[in-house]
Amino acid sequence: MLQPRYQFLFLVIGLLLLPTGSTTSQKKIILDNDWNPTAFIALLLPLYYNYTVLGLASDTANSWALQTGLHALASLEIASLSSCIPVYKGSNYPLIQTAYIFQNYELLYGELPWKGVFAKENTTNEKLGNDPTSGDLRRWRRKLLLPRGIMATLM
Image 1 (cartoon, one colour):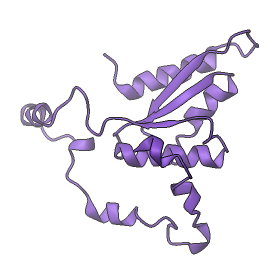
Image 2: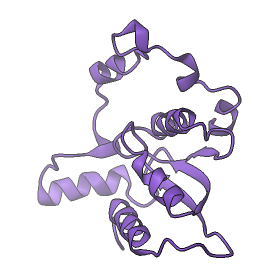
Image 3: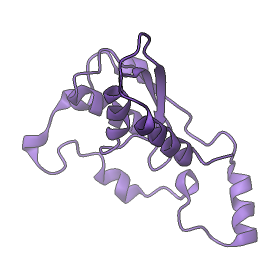
Image 4: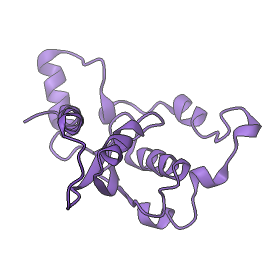
């Protein structure tokens, strides 16, 4: 079975190879990703090729599922798409890989450089990520973080 990021890569490549001609019925998709500030490109490609995006799903990978969901909401808000594309929070932990399996893998093959969700919590980075202004008070936009009505969909 392919890793999730490779499945997504093949999806993007497949979208790029599709013809752009108009058809009578639009194809419908749901995008599942660990959304971050630069992941909006994964949303733009299907829209460019006239796919109907039924929703976005966030999951835990580089960040926790809730945080990636908020990144997806912020991207939709910037593009004025938050009213027509819902965001759903996915699983906080991997569905197949468990901490027990991961620890046994490291015992057999050595320590992995990237542990993902199984890494110890980095409280320093978590505290740095709580500043919605990123240190610049002119960047503060509360509605980017908490758009009206969308938090109920995510929680």
